[in-house]
Image (tube, rainbow, N blue to C red):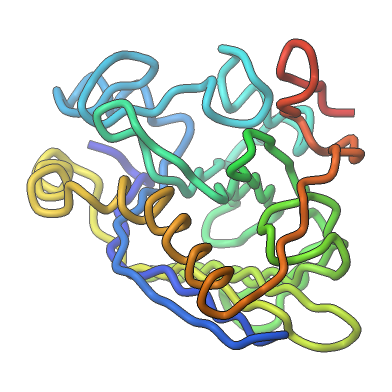
Length: 265
């Protein structure tokens, strides 16, 4: 069905190291879509839709700036157009019967098996969306790259706006590991990662996902976020930081903005 698009089966893990320790891990199924292959995948599988109503769906409007411009076109304002031989992989969970909430999506610009640049697209539970373009990648060992940037977007009510993110991308032939760690004053505050083993994205694998793991998308997002937040606040007594008004130009969807969107600058 597709040359580069894949399904991954693995787990998502959060480890809070301070001021109170707290950890959890859940099984998860997620996808790596080659953006150029989305129309072909939709044409060849009746369960999958691209900008149309199907049980499993990817919609352009769910990614990057609000609006119906294609994801690939939106990315050009951040990464530039793809050069010959390049492709862009979107790591995400699609809508399942119309529902999805992705705390983070990754847009990975690849040349062969080499990672050239990445965009981490973060959604919070308040309706805001932010992008961290990561073009200063450092290859630390074969098939593993790291990047750093300052935090400038409110996500968890149990963390303030201080700190730096350390990203790790390990993209191997059969596995992927994507890590985001929060550092503050030289210490780890939070370690999060998603990892999975690759399976071919074809009709039989989509059917397996559809039949065998129907709650991966629904349960690994909002319900579990709410449950873990309740544990942190009511059981572990962590203070809550109120959502500040977004100030960064990289916050591309602001719920308080009159039309709900902000252009990338």
